[in-house]
Image (tube, rainbow, N blue to C red; front, side, top):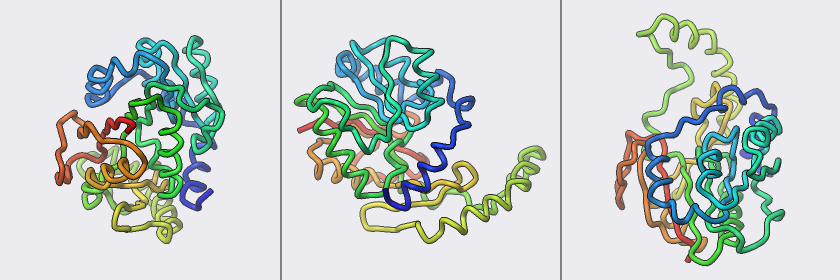
Length: 256
């Protein structure tokens, strides 16, 4: 396990996030993807990082067979209670050996799930997903947008317009600064990607950021063809577009 993923897994594995994620709200782009690729989602589907089943419930209503994987036991137990007809596995999705090769029509990795991994681990998961998919199977995933990095908040940023948010930001300021300093040496600015300590959970996480074009090349390197790229509001993002207003981009890629 890399130092990057070790930091991220330690945050997620400690639990306490169920209340935040136990809902059915979808982003506009997620609705578009589910509708646009509903035929691919009708078969056997695997969701990586299923959380509390926010998206999984919709997949279960569309797919013949739905599987979800998450590292956090409370999330998995919640999904098993709420969606008894789906199949859930408590596991680190870097190890997908518990599934048969060539057995899924579609694999989904929503909520930037793969962005908690270092570059080599991310690429290994893409290879594993390629092996799990049937011929011409579909991968739907989102990832933090490198074109948005310059607009990310600094740890010392406080929202002064709203008195309540100002008070919350001031109270959390010491923790944010400590986390930012602790993780600063793990950040990376590489030609094809960046590892960024962003504002998530008081700057306690390191996330992978990649541009649309670099992600297209990464897909090609691992046996996928990019067929769709949308911003968080569902707008098409074409080649060379940085889409700086969108913190994440959503992709559909087909196994070649």
